[in-house]
Structures are given as structure tokens and as C-alpha cells.
Image (cartoon, rainbow, N blue to C red; front, side, top):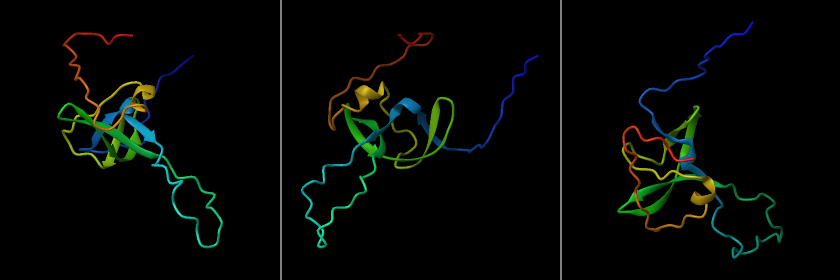
Length: 118
């Protein structure tokens, strides 16, 4: 015998959500030039990566740090850092991780009934 079940653990109404592939983690800016602390001991804590998305502003990519909430099968809730209606850039993480601020990007519009390319 077998069974199929749908288990809902949490729901949020009127939330801003983006596709999972839009959210990336960037390394913080290089802080190696910061002065040595007075006690001469360097902090052992590595800076935490910054979670964010690239948004489309005037055909250019702009990185926006965001805070996330619950994660679904294909979407993730954005609790702060992004406004409703902003267009986010999605794609493979290896491409988004190399994307630079103010890079000109071309918007690809999916036609109705079109299946995604493999």
C-alpha cells in the first residue's frame, strides 16, 4: 500500500515572494584593509554572506540585500528589502554570482504556452 499526503506547516497571506533561483548569497566586501584591533587579535568569525536578489532598474542589474522568511517548493518569502512589484532577475546561481552591479541585462519575456528551454 502507499499514500500521498500534503502537509502544510505554515502559511502567510499577502507576502512578497520570489523564485528560489533569484536569491543568492554574496560574500561581504573585502575588509582586509581594516585596522588591527587594539588587542592585536584578529576576530576569528568570518563575515556572514549577504543574502539578496538582483532587481532590474532601467535595464541594469542592482543588488538588493533581503531578509527571507518561509520557503516553499519553488518560491521564498521576502520579509524585507524588496517592494511589491519590483522585477527580480532569475537564473542559474553560477551566473547570478558572477553578475556585477550596473551590468546591462536584457529582459526575456516568456510567451504563453512556451515551455522553458532545458
